[in-house]
Image (cartoon, helix red, strand yellow):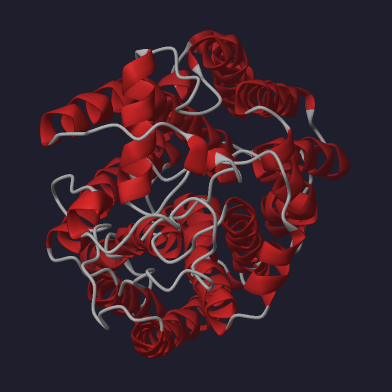
Length: 488
């Protein structure tokens, strides 16, 4: 179902008729502008974070004299900053216009990334990476999940590009003196020059979108009404924040976010080092991550397609966990010898299945949360869980355990087994919530079961369902709206 409630006067917005052709036209226009921006910005965010792993195979740890778990802490400082900033993100997202906030954040982390070029010590690396995380922290909550899979699949694209960049820049004679700094500077400058473009193209909401005509803006609002979503509010509703803290599903979402991102951080920070432990040189090690990135893209898009096509998210989510457990088991159990390079590579290439989980979790959260403030707080809590997972992941690995990193792999394996258990708990919780909703509807004189429009492949107006359905789509949370149907 929907994720955002509208301002209190949203009911005064003129009702207009929307056909399926109108729906497709508006969706196409929105994707062309807004989705393109989100995809590019998220790509930059992943690229800027992932190049740390490639810097490590080109001498970052040796040049900065990193010992013990210092490299792990350099990897963890970004999510530490993100976690610390989440309370501010919840407020900024509803107080600062998106067209202003997002470009400022993009510019800030681009400068921080470029500054890593001059970071030659443990302390300077911590400082630059801290500010990288601080500016990135406020960006993901701005990404209203328009085609979640599309922008999240840039994880794979960033992995491929980072691999080719490290390989290519490492072969340029003028870059040979400090290959890692060339990589940091290049991706930082690309991010910096992107900030003005984001400001130029971005709009604050569908009600002010310059790429839509005035009538299309009204139709866009109607599309949100049909999905029990809304157009946003500049008021922070404290009662919605309190409501989300009292719901068990909140803590299950946070647990999922934490657990899956432990694995994601491991591959981003230690993936190249795990590959280098298979006795390949640094250039081949870089290129071996390109199939990993391609698999990320395929898994993310395919899993999201299956979840939408079969109108079920949790079964697909559970299926994604199985190959990750198999891959981690292989990397843990198979000895690092030249004769075992193929099975070890196969095990490593099973890990991209974990990247299909995050977009499904995000869309699952959004489909089960209504209310502008409530959705903002929930996404901030999701990001807090993600940040916590990204903090924990690198700290599970220590240089004294290389090249096998068995303690870290064993801990990560246990975490993904726990993830499967949490998913099952959430399914049971949502089933119970829908039973409660049915009882409320009957008590209010409605049918126990109503049609859920949020997973429909074609546009259907609430008005077609009759009985006043959709009148509350803009002004109440899912916990207060007896028309809300929780999705699995």
